[in-house]
Image (cartoon, rainbow, N blue to C red; front, side):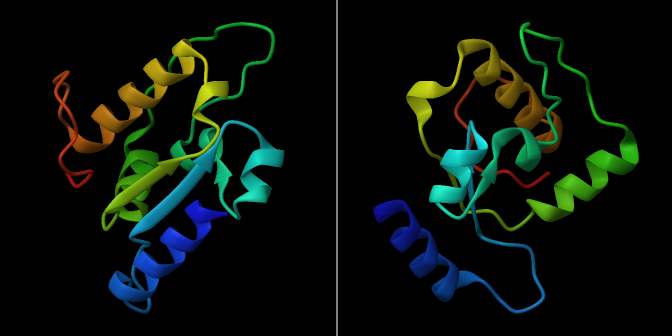
Length: 115
């Protein structure tokens, strides 16, 4: 609940009409995502769902990457709910996708999602 209140307040303060969101909220499962009025991490970051296996990471096609970069271009806060349910392999995929979006493949902390 506090996640939603924080996200709503930041959205009110910083989001401008007709611009990408400044706050994105993701969760590892659909039920968790609905509970916080967010989306699944898979959907948010365009990661493939591979049940029963670790699965491979696949880079996005240039058009998909461009669209995702635009959708996340104004993000100031990325909330990942139910973090304890996120497998280490999924964390690696999230890291790789954020690197792909930012163009920064450093292991350093993200300062900004913008490219």
